[in-house]
Length: 324
Image (cartoon, rainbow, N blue to C red; front, side, top):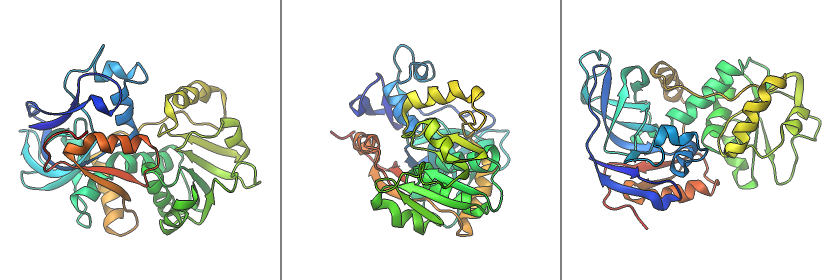
């Protein structure tokens, strides 16, 4: 099968489109013929090998044909002998490792039927980002109706979903983004939108019950000024960089209003819940750009610019080189 792999760490130039062996089917696995996959900030961390701890998961001292990608939508090609929920030919989506390839392997427990209202490219934009927003607001933040929630970085992959999920949970949602994204964030359902180039949301006197910080562009002390006494900061790694991640981990035990870092675990059950919201028209993906698989380097370069509106998707069904 063809896959985007890396054999060293660094810029998108380390990425190759290469023919490799497909993953081996295990008893509780679903083999997925990938139609589309989306990119996440974690893919940049893996590509760069930063922080160093990431290298122990990707490959130390250097990776060996490591296949990038965490999100996929496609068609079931085969199932293990213990799998009961899926059969070949069904359209599914999931969060699993190694999705920038023609075939990916996922545990049955992480797979869900693709939303009927979405094509494969839009479905591939959902899993990791939407599960992160769901876990942060519903499970960690325990958002309740009537609470005031602020989403910093509301126009990105996690942020666009968080605005919508916050509304489904009954919160009064404020989104923070740049001027060019104000109308988009408002259209997603935000009650209020702050253009950070014109207004500082931490010094206006408004306080929030929860701040989901996807940007990492403000200090924790600044964010706490915008919290109610019992409010909570949810630091999401996103594009805040690994320095932001490490500061959040170090400070969490000492700051009452700050939750620790959280990670969305792949979950077919949670994807089933999201499918219901998606097919009901309450939640939907925002896809900024779609690239063919052979333009993976260009896709990663665009992701590195940190200006994507929603998600960047790769069409995996065809591709012949890896681009300049």
